[in-house]
Length: 135
Image (cartoon, rainbow, N blue to C red; front, side, top):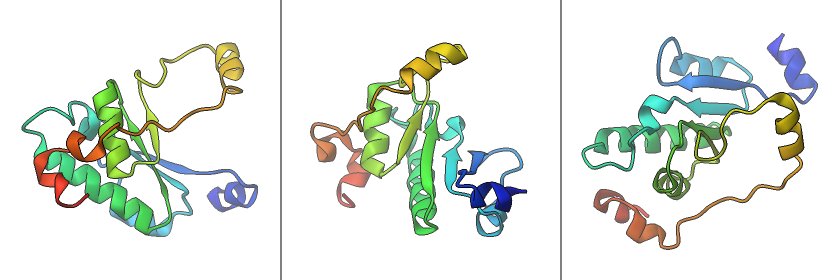
């Protein structure tokens, strides 16, 4: 069924990657186009003491790109987190910062508005010190 959808040009995501029942095995066996990072890795990402989450997010973004997938981060709630994910190369953002849930009619009206990719004013300064050497 997924192959039929892909044949029609429909993209397929693995949602909440990194939690629950998601597995690395899915990345190689399903015809997916997008990987959605679970919000548990994203929330509080820019806070100090979250270096392990930062490393996991960076590695997952790199893995997704190596497999030709778009990477979406779920749970973006602040500009600082959005800028950090842009610095890490994340392709798309989802969360209250980018837009709260709305009724279908409001969504349809908003979907016609072009979107912009936000990049930090100074990406090197915005990165935690242990990432600056890799940027």
